[in-house]
Image (cartoon, rainbow, N blue to C red; front, side, top):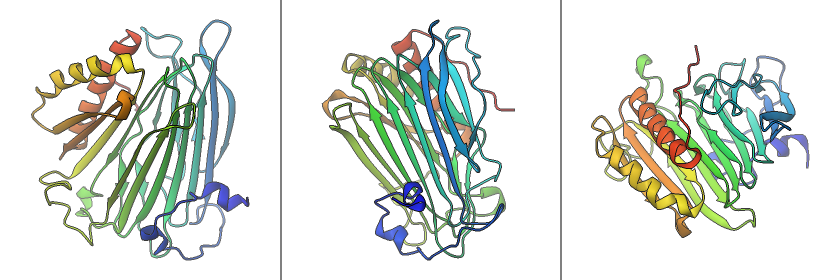
Length: 308
């Protein structure tokens, strides 16, 4: 496998391939860059989760672990940063995160994932998350903002042990609304695959939005809303039904967004879809989902994360 293949998804959809043209890997600050973040987290002798392996290549970096939660003082908080400010045409990103030995961690991004305008090629990102037995991981990145004429493919591979928990979310916005750019990107394709420790498929999901080729306001797409958020909760079977009931009790009291839940096949988890017109409103629901889930699974509190 050559270097570019390592950074590039092996199943790029034909809709993305249609934009593929060769982009030479140029110097710092130019399009066509690759970035990598490779992390391993484990508990130390005192039960504190620490980073035991770390490698990064700009434009992906990680800040040192923080421990801000009073109810979970041994839980590591990690912030992914990108000095480039966004993803450019020809960019290829890859992030690998592995949790072992009863590690518990929360990971987020320093800011939104901005997909800049493109006149050739596309951009892609691979995210591989492995959560071993008896580990707990929350990955709650900021929203994806696709700029006018951008093309983006994201492949997420989740490998989650049946006796562990992963809470993963993503939010897709219509673009730079303040700049009068709303649904002017070419394509945003999000693909999520999840398997257990035996490589058995837990779920597969594809989200493809091509605003210039489809009516996003149609029923069954986005309807009256512009922002879609998704939360996947992969956890032990004995958590699932009660947790979904707790979530639905809260959801009935939400009036600024539309929210629905479904139990995943074989009761291996829950998927929650959140539709709204304000990013903050969607995040408020996601944080509440995180609060309810953490209380049920860990018996601990969740504090809304500050990033400034």
